[in-house]
Image 1 (spheres, rainbow, N blue to C red):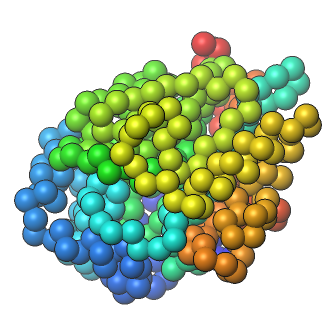
Image 2 (image 1 turned 180 degrees about the horizontal axis):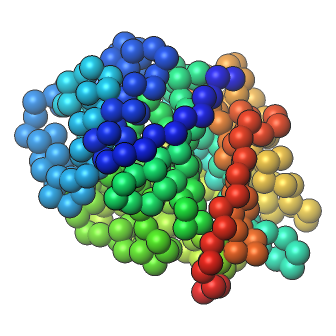
Length: 347
């Protein structure tokens, strides 16, 4: 697996330029190979896309500057790169059999055992070998390390910042979208926050364009949180028992969303494994290959599943610190690891 690790520092624009130069293959060429990007191009020049940009600039202008920098670094039009960062905020026809995904297992801490968030990052197979791990050191925000897709703001897949704040994300196929702050700006904003409460203030804004599911924890805070945040609401669940989440809302009955076969099967299978008398370790669940058609670990290329497990992030909170690891797949040794120490006291 090719998952380079890079560092980028500077102001918001300079960071964007560094990110835009990263893909080994030209970003424009790479994105044109992705069916979802091609479907999104119908929105170029639209009033709706302009409205999303205006909403983002009004609240989080420095993250728009990062997107401008990505466009400069990649020698692409800003509108194309901004469009890509609105990929979940604009209605498009589904382009694959459950392509986008992610499965997250959250396990509360207990006597002698750390709290754990373990996350399979599933995406389009076209990105295998083009994603990277980046440490961002902004001149006007929190330093953080994140898995990053080419052309996207970092912070939305899995990430941890210098305050020991961890966020992992599950895509939701909601049909409820509005003109507001694009969700990738929301996830980036979380990584600048100092605490879980500060992060929740961002996720509960009523001017968000669309939805993500956020898994949150922080060193020095004993809360483990599952946050379902559609544009029209925000439900915060404190995780007190081992918990799984795939790619549909679980706590908003009647919400207008698409539940893909992959998401339905991964959720069902993870819940079943967690309910066993002796639950398997999180990495064991994330590496599960049953059933064949829609497995939790999507590393194989058989069957109808067009999604692919690009990497697995594991975060453990204990004794005021976060120990993190990034694996190429759940069953493989870690490629990268690190420790973030926090001086916070437990909530």
